[in-house]
Image (cartoon, rainbow, N blue to C red; front, top):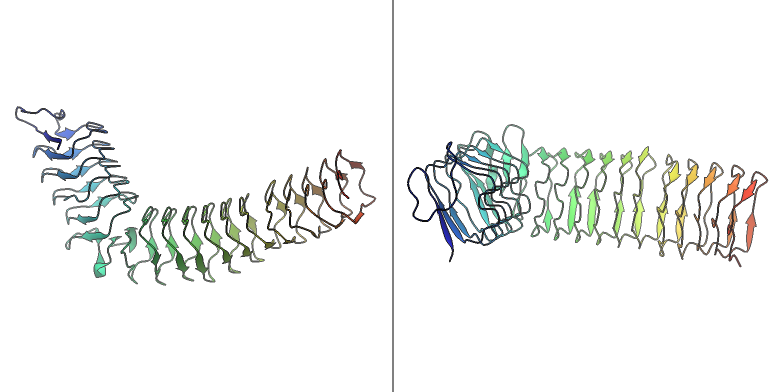
Length: 409
């Protein structure tokens, strides 16, 4: 067993790290070291940034009552650390202080602590018990909820796989459950009105979740890479879904977006490889880029009225896509937007479309197409390798690019 003693104010038998004159344990002082335990001198008042960063073999540590500040990433990536006692002298625990301490099972916040950053315990996937000591004036763990709640705002800032969200909580903070791999389901009470960005990101075992009608928006990356998420129920009341909200949710098969939603951000369903159907409301007025990127199992889609363009490569190589309904509001169909959609045999292009991009329908087994009067140019390879039996080209077309209908039999 490798161990280290950090002394201060006295000669050191086994010199460890220097201590600053102001009794701070310096930045990066043990970064990546291989020892398994450490005893810190009672003269130390601050553990500085990254002091024990990446000490993966560290299994135990004694923090003396002299320490008042645990700084940013002080114990980040100490994956072997299973428990730690924070003394009643500590006032501030810095951002990501215990980031990715995956072996950490339990944590108790003493009543002396006045400041905890939202991301302090992000990635502590093994965490099953969280407690704030009674008498803390800033934070609490009401109703034995296994979470840290900011008392004055009723905001849950840190949760774990055994958290029960109390009915008094009004918001879930950014990254509150990020990386809780043991979390399979959780009930969000009607008291909650907001869920912060990345609140449930990387919860690899989360299978289902219900968003109550009191929540008005899903922030960016809220369910990022929740690879086991199979179902999500979103109640009427939600108005906004932020970018990358469901990125990488590869087990999600269907989702119904309520009519109250008006804004859908960029890449919202990027990488949802199992999703077959999505209901989009007609009230959407802001529709982001690449919303359906890599949703290769999608079979049907109705684009809501109000959307004005299909982005470049939006549905490219969606081999399962059989049905697409475009609204009258569409003006532009981007380059390669439906290229090689091998199951798409028909599509109605609205009269208001004025531009169809390069290779937009290349490789689609379309049997017929009516090109609207507003089109003046058919771009290169727009309809190449289609299976047309009939085609209508309007008088408005003044130029046709090379390979526009190449291989159409």
